Length: 307
Length: 179
Image 1 (cartoon, helix red, strand yellow):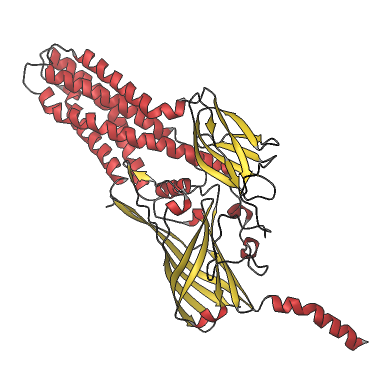
Image 2: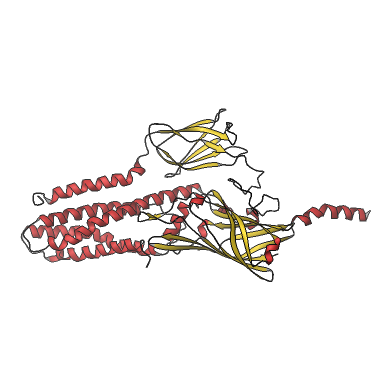
């Protein structure tokens, strides 16, 4: 059965598999086009509608913001591209209410209601949630120190939603990078295991064809894995420390190796198919592949296991 | 006439004197969070906390603030992930508030109720135990805050698809000086 498959057809099959995996892994990134609807009612603790409250939907993926205000009956409606959003409900005299993750996607409108608590007379520093009567709980007395008493700079106290959006995107892309790296390991290991059989003295071509097909799949998956690492946003002002430096250094070995290995492999494959013994530079295919796989494994382990 | 003016000034100034009896300033601090993962045990350390305590009528109000970005685990990649999951760019500070009797300054151990704002959420921790060591006008305080990710609605970061444990205890080591 295996013999009846050419290396090209196996490679084609595995490439389709790789595309399916890619689509599954990247679906959250590309499914951003169709529109969804978020609606609901904003009310206070007594259930009374809160008019003119502002609802802000911040895309967790892109940081893009959409806002709407409630009408006299406390209702609102937001048209949003599908995705994950953080919903913030704000109104004068009330504490901010937040829904940290709201998924918008289907054809049906998603309902998210906001329940606002009346705010205490504020000292300008305290956001609130439910207070409890603790024996020595923090009070809101006028002598309580505030953030301005601590001498923190504005950069330290003010939030930066744009940077948060950048971090969210970075993490999202690196999660895909991590998953794809793990998936890539499977055909990579299989290719290496089949290597000696593919280059042996056997006249049969089945193992060689499978080796080529798995190698092709590995190369494709590796390319996708690398793409998500390279394209992940850099965070300004971050100095790299720790295992990530080794992880990235390994890429300078397995990256060129992943280009060189198939080139040398194609030369060896051609020589074998011509009935020749593998010779010349093509002989380096095996050693280069081993070094490449080793560097890839070391890169994976460096960020996975603490040494 | 002069006596009358002086009396008026003293009376006017009395609330000011009465408002604050004494103050405490945070001199040094080491805050360490601990994260457990099946493959890793990680710790992040910050020495950047700033704090102040204001005492009045036998009660002291304390505020401590720590920049989220100041925690260093020795791995910049992990630190960036921690900032991301804790929404540290959007909510850059962890603040801790507590109110303690002024008399606690002479105790060797106290239990404090803490109100912690972190990652855009507020959580309260009741009766957290701390050890105190007073030397002169300085107090050395140590303890562990039993924080969890769920308390602050933080999605557990994962490595190799395995999430970290919910518990993120924070060890506190502080030196306060009375003004």
